[in-house]
Structure formats: structure tokens, C-alpha cells
Length: 330
Image (cartoon, rainbow, N blue to C red; front, side, top):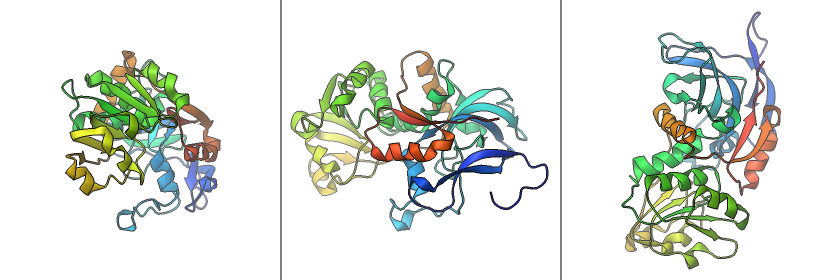
């Protein structure tokens, strides 16, 4: 920890990054416990979700162009997704009380602090944890669920009048929520693209058609798609242009090369968006989960002490649902 804690300072365990780099830079150590300020609550974290931006932060955002790369002072605690129990409310807080079970994506895109036994959150970034879920499952929802929700409803305005929807990377965190929310919106048919081992998982989630990209490139098998949610991106994103109709829309979850001039000639629009913290929308997702209309996929669970292994699993890719850290608070 940074120097000696003052006498009587409450401590906690947390994972911190002291130098940017590979997963072995994640250090489990003892640090001072935070206190909530006005409009904030202190949450005893039971579980923390692992998301791609956690890895970006660990690497010093080296994945991003230097001009837009955040400069985060070291050391820091990564993680934005948490599920836990309110233990203390700051000044002026009336909506949350100690003992309330909550989950949320806290402070995104600012500095997160979820890989810890306790975390401070603005009240508006939290929602009541779905009663039907444990904390591990609830911690898997916020960033991926909000990304899918905001892309489909806020930005694309998806509804029953929209035609076929294709989700590329359909088995992953954002993808498996996007498949389900597209069906809830009434759009469709919904086409899921993933490797063959995810076929039964995605059929259980309700895809109308499954494409195993390891056997058949989707650009050879699919046409006339109205909306593409691309949860893969990368330099070969343009390969999916043939699946879209004129007037089709691409919503990339990760940066990709979609050959903008070629897309424009084909009448295809590409619009990227960044997810934002929103407790109200999380409450909507919680209602869908408790109504058994939205399922949460868990790829793997690691203890907080093994955050390094969790990041190594994330970097291997091909996830089925989300990776979660189980946090043991005193």
C-alpha cells in the first residue's frame, strides 16, 4: 500500500495495478477502505465483473490512439461492474439504505474501483440487485447488459418494424444480451454468429438462426440484414458488409475497419457509441431478469486473489457469457 496507514484506518483487500502491462501486473494487496462522499454510498462488494476495458486500463490504454488515450495515475484499482450490499450512505442520500442489495456499472468511463472488498458509487449508478440472481450472476450484467440495451434501444431504436438482426460474437458478454434484447424488442429474425461449441447455448437464448463461422463465413451465408451488432470488430469488420441490405446499420461494440467509403456506396451506416452508467436502465434489465425474460451467461468465476488468471482467460477470448471475480469481504 502507499506508505503506512494512519492508526485506526480501516483496511480492505483490493487488486491494484502499479505498472502497466500483462495480467501479472495485477497485485492483490491491502489498502485503505474508501468512504462515501455526498450523493454516494459505500458498497461491500460480493462480486465484480470482468470486462474488456479492464484489460485496456491494465495495459495503460495502449490499444487506443495516443490522442484519446486516458492518462491514469498509478496505482489504481480496475473494474467497473459490482454487485454487493450497501454498508454506508453519504450525506444527502435517501434512496439507498445499509443492507440494500445493489449492482451497477460504477463511474464508467471514469476510473473504476470494483476489484476490491469495498467500493464507493454514486447513487444513480446503482439499481436493486435482481432478486432471482446471486451476486456473481448480477455482477455479470451491468456493462455488457447496458451496452446491448443502449445500442439497441437508445441508439438504433430497434423495434418490431425492423428486419433481420445479426449479432456477430453472439455468445460473448454483449452478444448474448443483444440476442435476447433484440427478440424482446420484437425485431427479427435474430441471427447469431459464433463458433460451433456455442450453438446449443444460443439456441436456448432464442436465436432464430445460428451460423458457425468456423465452418461457414457469415458473409457467404447471410443476406438482407437490417441491423448488425458487431461484438468482434477488428481489421476485418468490412467482411460483413455483404450481409447487409441497402439502408442497413452497423453498431460496432469494438473498433473495426468497415471500409467507410465502400459502406457508404452500399447505403450502409456505421455508428459507434460508448456505454454510460445508468441505474434506471439497470433496473429495467433487472425486471426482465426477474421476469425470466433475460438470462445471464457465466463463462467462468475466479476468486479476487486470482484476478490475473481471470484476465488471462479474457485474453484467450471465445467466451460464453461473462467472467466474474468472487470477492470475499470480511
